[in-house]
Image 1 (cartoon, helix red, strand yellow):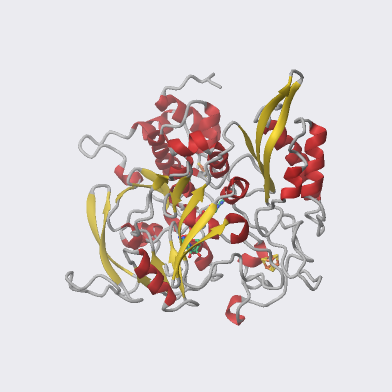
Image 2: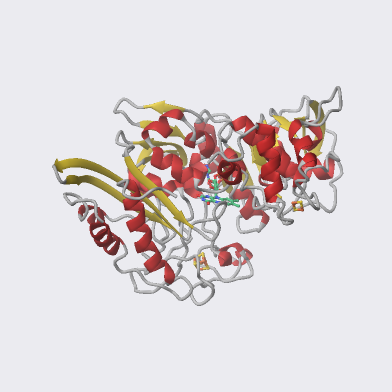
Length: 347
Length: 183
Ligand SMILES: Cc1cc2nc3c(=O)[nH]c(=O)nc-3n(C[C@H](O)[C@H](O)[C@H](O)COP(=O)(O)OP(=O)(O)OC[C@H]3O[C@@H](n4cnc5c(N)ncnc54)[C@H](O)[C@@H]3O)c2cc1C
Ligand code: SF4
Ligand code: FES
Ligand code: FES
């Protein structure tokens, strides 16, 4: 790690001030599980670390509208095992518990999880070209090592920039964020200009021609909480994660599926609401309301699920080693929706 | 990582204003296995390096230094974490337990999980073992395990290159008095 100054404010405003004082050189640190790793590799080289662990952001609170507010500093483990999350948002519990290891989940925070950076191998290796890492020669050469390199874990959707070029095919590696996308969570931030909220769909971004930016946060802004809306789709949901080993591995593809079913007539159920989001396939959790609309008003059958899968994967493009993900993703969607509808067991 | 050369400890008066202290060596104390240890280290010293390089508590192992193996697992306020991905300075007011602190300090009796690892021959080279044992103790505290499958899933953060997994599961199941056929 490069030397840095260590600050430990106790209030949100002070933390924001500390960061705003040197927006390019300072970083917040929460659980440290991603930032310290990247600092050891010199991928991140902050000269000031602002430790936010003493900020009063470690509570889970019920909201008046029936939703739940998850403090930015609540650990992933405490969130997943929180009785209200287990009862009302089992999809979120399952997604968090599918990620990392018990030790890491005990350190990782809800805020930090949103910001975890891609696991692209070229991004991690400062001797390799990488447009996402590149901001000056100290962080290695520009270019994209993965595009014509080894790209088995990389993105198949949303990679093209407006000019038709591809600058980065990294994926966002979070499991938690896929469930947050399906649940339409809202991110609360506090910054030099005050507070604002960002719908999760607008929080992460596609790489375009500026893959250095993972999200839409402005300089100096701090995430204070994540709000979950009242509807947690707690009866019919599934988080399906496919990976190279059964546990403690990042997703090749993952699916958060959530349904509401209504008895339409004597012959069976009909889907009255649907949410579908994917991880491991794009620079952000991948969701398209068009795919969900194809499910509503239909009976929960594999054919119907297949049509939603085709719609969600529309425009998918493989780069060689990762082309298998297109078919894998479609099958994973059908299975996850079947599990959510209780037509198939979960494992 | 700065592990090869130890920075010369700078003596700072304990009454010096605690923050900010800049990029230099920082003085603080850590509570480890019930004892207080004074440290004079740079803020970029990980908890793992503080234990091993500065406090001579080398029971905690460094496998990958990247959160990928679990060899560095310690308990912080009873919860298992990877000591390689956290800074020592972030734990000033926590209770840290390492493998050295699990045995009964008065009687010297091993912790039941330590004893079970011996009884079940749950290691070969032993490098992952302190992490496995601390992790198992943390897992038992969490109270989420009912089956062998739960043990395997919730111990997945501890890699064993020797592949002692079946005996590790046996040892933990024994301590928890789980029924081996529970599904
Ligand atoms: C071996 C390994 C395996 C893993 N496997 C998985 C997996 O399978 N699935 C998965 O989803 N994740 C996985 N993870 C990633 C893990 O979930 C993240 O590292 C963790 O969620 C990051 O949270 P943190 O609190 O430790 O963040 P930190 O490392 O402290 O911070 C990460 C970034 O977020 C910023 N930040 C933190 N909090 C805030 C805030 N409140 N406001 C603004 N900025 C903030 C920091 O400045 C930093 O840039 C794995 C990690 C490791 C090391
Ligand atoms: S895919 Fe993105 S992160 Fe990976 S090398 Fe290319 S530019 Fe860098
Ligand atoms: S040394 Fe910490 S997880 Fe491997
Ligand atoms: S006993 Fe050798 S690594 Fe586990």
